[in-house]
Every structure is written in C-alpha cells, then in structure tokens.
Image (cartoon, rainbow, N blue to C red; front, side, top):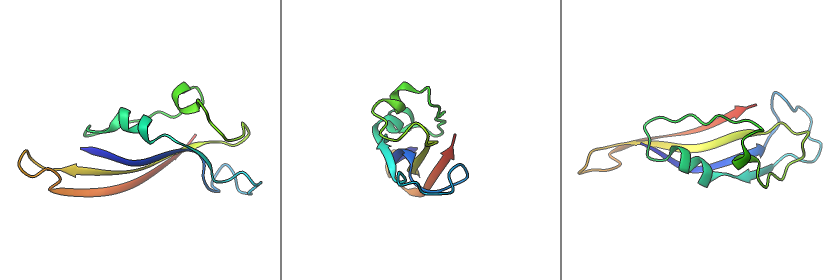
Length: 97
C-alpha cells in the first residue's frame, strides 16, 4: 500500500532542462494532499504531470519559463489485517516534463 510522505511540484534543483541557476531554483508548491488523494492506499499509482493539470497548476509560484517536475517521497507498506506495516520500503521519485 502506498503512503505519501511529501510531494512537491516545481523546480527544486538543476537538472536536464535547466543547467544554470537564474535565482529561482527551490521554487515549488506543496502538493502532498493532491498526490495523497490520487495514490494513498493503492498498490500502484501513476500521476501524469502536465502543465494542463489545473489542480497542480493552481497557485503555482514559479515563473512560466521554468520547467516544473513532480518530486514524491513515498513508502510502500505490506502487511496483513493483524500486523499492518509489517514491512516497508521508501522511495523518492522525480519526473521531469
């Protein structure tokens, strides 16, 4: 089962699309609630990130020239009805547009 600890949408670091810091890196929107609503409790999940996703873009604080990406810190927990959380693994996933 997927548990979302945090999710950020924006431009948090240099990468393939941006190789020079023009003073706007670290710009992001906390989208933990959005990603949790879409993924929490499921055994698998896909979040398609586009600039046309109104929920992700609402209140987006970064400049239009920055290419945003989604960074998710999550864990997967397996267990049974007696011992929820018997085992777990943790992942951080970043995807670029």
